[in-house]
Length: 352
Ligand code: ADP
Ligand code: MG
Image (cartoon, rainbow, N blue to C red):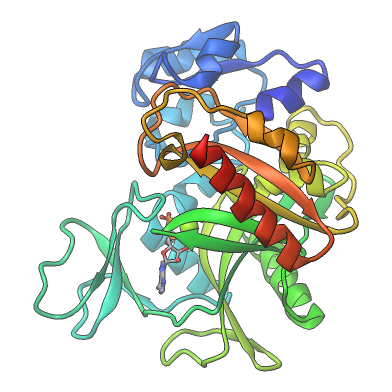
């Protein structure tokens, strides 16, 4: 999706990816298939590129030294965002609202998360004293009674800053299921979420995209330094210095998408302010489950669902349970209509 946005602005795209079966390798001309720590391959790759960005932060940052000057967001940003303890220390040191944490196993129930490598709920557990904890370096977080999860993407170039509208996210089995925009939160809360996201990106000094994930609750957390706005408490959960799954909704919902924003920043094209288009927009993920035993999805039901503005299939060959195979975006008159349409279209795709 980023490549599409780059191509539209006349760029040439080269991809570095260990797996030759990865969709982008099948669709791009300049491909390097090598390991994330293959210093020789990384150096050769960097010599082909004027700018390098990443869509996945779980790579060792040291081997990327050779592309330090092309890397956007910077090595320093990557080093913080790829390590949960560093990320949380950064939030604490900068006085940003966050989920209380310890870097050891506590004496009370907590969410344990490995400091590196976790995504889509992998590398974390809800833990009670007596159970075997995760092994290796970890953070232990206060268990938050979450009412709403939200995310906010800030795009920063050297001279401009754009803030996307706040998305409301629903997870199922710790995997993002649905994103809705506008989020159903009071205006003051939405503004506070955007302010904190902007402040976080500034403090991290991001050039590129920064997605900030938030937990919102109406019960004041016991330990977490949350920001109170009216009767809501908000805190940052985690940071992603790249396009984010929730941001896929911007491909239809906004005047330009998160991918367009990053492409503009990478290519030194003026950024501008993204604006939300009228109506309610919903993004539904398509996981491997939707495929059942099939290897290809039958899109015939789309004909009966004109509110579905986009179906995007990533070209991954093996649909496995929990694997993100694609997404779709609906446009609704209301939140209820949008949610109903997401459920109906997903069900129709699952049946055929
Ligand atoms: P990742 O998205 O990298 O897998 P997250 O830290 O975002 O990891 O956790 C995934 C999901 O697990 C969150 O979106 C939330 O639904 C739930 N979760 C994570 N941390 C907590 C917490 N401290 N309290 C309650 N729920 C949590
Ligand atoms: Mg997350």
